[in-house]
Length: 304
Image (cartoon, one colour):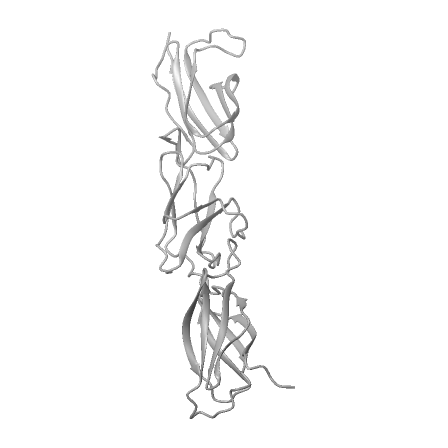
């Protein structure tokens, strides 16, 4: 049985560990390919671009049973497209030109971008946390993924957001937590980099107003007073707070605060009445704040 004069494509496969754009094509020889390296016969690789066949390059025909060559693809395979590119081989023999049957293959970008560097996170004083990091140097960079968690050393799973800029303001953070962040780079072929180093921060304001960084019980004002004074305290995070008035013997007069409160600069007035609503006598009184392990006491003077 005579061998066919047309070459035959055996396989088209991606070149691994590259940035995509190339495949290897393996094909069987034409039956007229019987010469040695002194031959002037050629094989030409053609690619179908739309309705046209475009010549890519030629290689010598010198009597091998099969040949392997590399060829450019039209696009890489990705989540958006299979990236299939169609090729054929033209055998230019002394006996004439013979075309193989078309066959197709795809290339893959196998190399992910470098992990982002220089990530920082800072409370911005405007109800959010500002993140910034270095730009990606990958030529095929597409976007960054930002990951957030309230657990240190977290494993990123679902991104908080995907953005192109190397800066982001997280305005969806609440006041009760410290937030931990990591980011990654993604290229145009869906390759994701390793994750950046982890950074952390917390919100530094309420409604655009900065909130305190530590518990503080302020001195009442006015002091001395008659009959109303204002007690102020700084609450750095959400907590259960008790603010109690005592006389000098340690007897409880009244509780002004006994509740869970959001962080902020707090104030409450005392109108010189006890728990039954009766006016107390002039003298020195103590007011004490308790919240978790924090306890602080100050004196105030009621005049008549």
